[in-house]
Amino acid sequence: MNEQFIMAGVMGWPVAHSRSPLIHNHWIKKYQLSGAYGRFPVEPKNLEAAIRGLSALGLAGCNITIPHKVEAMQYMDWVDPHAQKIGAINTVVVQANGTRHGYNNDGFGYLQSLKEAHAQWRADTGPVVVLGAGGAARAILVALLQEGATEIRLLNRTLDKAQALAQEFGPSIQALPWSQRHEALAQAALLINTTNQGMHGTPALDLALDELPTTAMVSDIIYTPLVTPLLEQARQRGNTTVNGLGMLIHQARPAFEAWFGIKPAATSEISDLLIASL
Ligand code: NAP
View 1 (cartoon, rainbow, N blue to C red):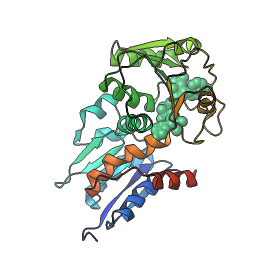
View 2 (view 1 turned 180 degrees about the horizontal axis):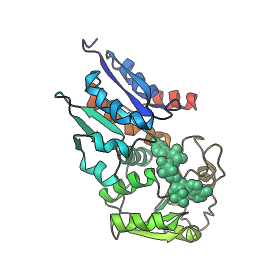
View 3 (view 1 turned 45 degrees about the vertical axis):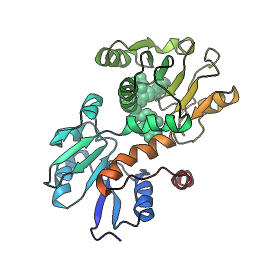
View 4 (view 1 turned 180 degrees about the vertical axis):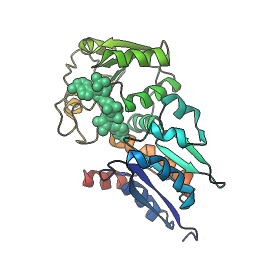
């Protein structure tokens, strides 16, 4: 057993639904570390005090989840350039001198989940279609661009938001009206759903896959349910599918390494734990 007791957690409001404690506490046990990872329900009005309190309490850091990912940035002493580009953080690492560094590992987690499903996957093999322009889409777009994607078709119910992202992130992103989502699938190598459509309690994504090549990968970042109607539809016509569980697990790995000093493995044990909790 390691002598030092290391504490971390997740700040959100509400935060009871967060699966992060399952992941991190599993690794703490697996690697026989002395530490704990908790849930911190922090109301928006208390965010600054809570973040400033991290070092006072001796915590190694925390994850930041909805609705604090954007607000939390201003309380960092340093923000990683990748997170700056996304405009949000999901991880705080408290340094030895008490200062706070902010990171965003959502895009990393997403790319890892694709590579896990298809080791030879490359971002520049063909057009990528991204549905949705919310917080998760921002992280995924920045990661895809850094990975070398050259043609991204971005479609969002509210066109303005897609146009604003295309303007901000450059000419590799083409914003298209939501009504064109069916035809936009032609020649695509990868389709990504980042909307909430298909999640438990919401209707299925309204999308006809006829134009999508059967060689394209289809990814849905939703993980409740694990197989969304979109993934079921894609699977039936022979497309390779990737669900949202891998993104959730892989985004946790760099944070755990920064706090606990061990590169954790994304094993089937964790997937099983998470699936049992869904
Ligand atoms: P968000 O910022 O609220 O964005 C929601 C997106 O869904 C927006 O683009 C929105 O379009 C679109 N949308 C909502 N209702 C719609 C409808 N009826 N028809 C078409 N589009 C609709 O949410 P987020 O944080 O990006 O999260 C999006 C999803 O990703 C959630 O299901 C979340 O659980 C999942 N997620 C998974 C992971 C993971 O680790 N696997 C991580 C983060 C998020 P408008 O702009 O028009 O409103």
